Image: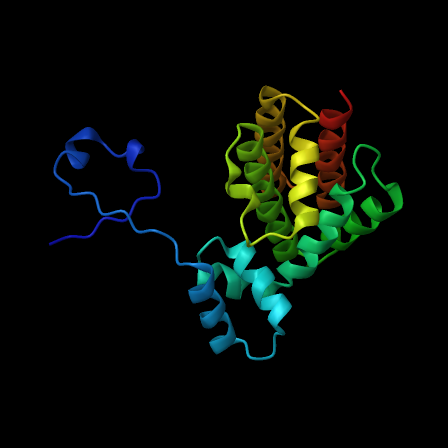
Length: 196
């Protein structure tokens, strides 16, 4: 018996797929993730544990990584910037870019990039009418922000922005781009999407 784990089974060769049985593993529930976070990180308060469970999307490993990498603070900074759209707070944007662009902040940059893409995916789901973005793992202010921005641009435009940001984040390490400039460009792309 062989177990083949695939996050994208459609990309497997048909000869492999035809010989496999599909076993879908669903993400853990919020309560389970919160229990695991609390068991491994007793130093976190209840609000932070709840926020990490929200960001983890059912993955306790991701929640613990975010806690270790300062992902919660990065996410709060990111949401603070997104709340200023359609007119970005330039000073806060440069401070955030400087924080992610400084020497030794490579992990923080990658964490922030992953969180932004995750958040944009939730925004796109909201734009198509999927209500999962408004579940109990998210506070009302964030739900309102997602709804406001989802309605500010067309679905096609949000897909273009997600794709552009994803490509830019991938290229950053490959061609040694300035991380601060990448952060500025990413948020300016978001601003342009909302304003156009």
